[in-house]
Amino acid sequence: MSYTLAAAATATGLSQTTILEAIEDGRIAATKDEHGEWHLEPAELRQLHPPSAERNVGGEVAPPLATLDVDALGAQIEALLRQAAQRLRQQADARRARESGHASQLLPADEQT
Image (tube, rainbow, N blue to C red; front, side, top):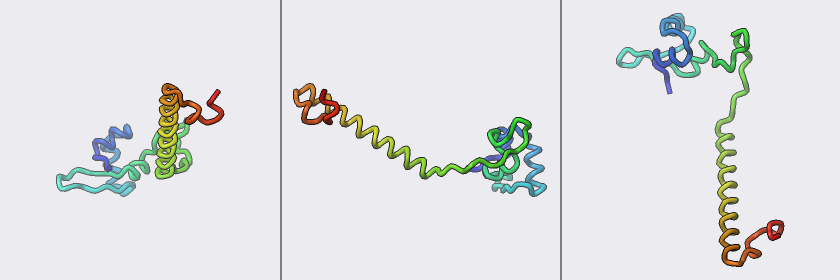
């Protein structure tokens, strides 16, 4: 997802002029589309203006934070969702069994009391 010059200015709080000067000076890369509108990739924009979390109290740029492994996080979320769904199915089965008088067959031994 690229930013237009206007969107980049809104996202960073910088003026469009400041961002355009950075493009023209070669500090960040950007491309123009067929309509003459500038487009910047988020990584380029971060070079010019790191997110506020990467700035310390004095406004100086802090060392980069560890990069998150999005794929690993996604896999963990999926595993947690599967576990939650399995637990809900077990609870629903246990409730149906209790209602029909067969609770001892479906509940684990520690939940039969």
